[in-house]
Image (tube, rainbow, N blue to C red; front, side, top):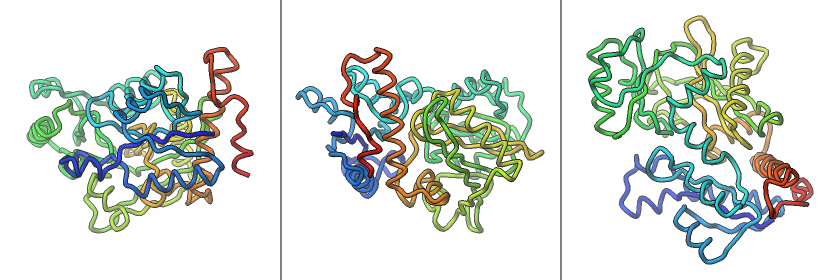
Length: 349
């Protein structure tokens, strides 16, 4: 297959004057190199496209691909992760990972939690603070946890995010509202173990890849998987592989798989959970566009921990997308499809 590769390169945005924090979710050059090498190792031809504006220019010039391997995070707005999928939908070009609806819903943590509650799954009680006056209606049980509603990579999360009284809550919400210019999600704090569950596949074919427990080491920022802890994870965090023979892990994986299906996650991603004081896991967040740095990102680290190579992880993602597209073509949803007849397993052999 000819596979287009869409991405936001961190160094490109830094050179344009954006800050380290603004570019925290973007990819490093070695991530793009690794994905390209894996795809070529699977027998595919790779065309580096880059960010959304490059994609628009290439499409306007008449360029097309059998599949786009999309890891664009987007720069601004709650719908930023949906921009590339929406553009590709206009041109009926298949791509990996979530559609525009999935990307927008999962980036807005409050809307995600509403969908999870509708699916009958547990998630901490919460309120959305859009203005300081909204704090007058907070009726949650302290301690609470405050974070920007539409950020990733731990942006906005520090030890001060855990608040024990109303004065701390007011101060933290004011800080985050000013700095991030978006609503703040305030939810009841869960004191138990923290897990990230990796998922592969789509719908009925989705399955759990495995689970890592996030264990903070001495010197780490306390009580949270913060931006600093994530950026310096090699020295501050232990990613401990845990298995479902532990009842708490079994329940975390059950919730994660149900949540992934309820949110219509596609191809691969992660669900983050934390346990309450009784040891019962609850849903925290969904990541339908998980990082893919071979050593630094949670999903590839999890694959490595369970004995799956990086190339195999990329193959599973492409195979899942190919299966979706063939199924859609067979049902008549697509008039044209470059993936029809494609055998990605053969390419991997």
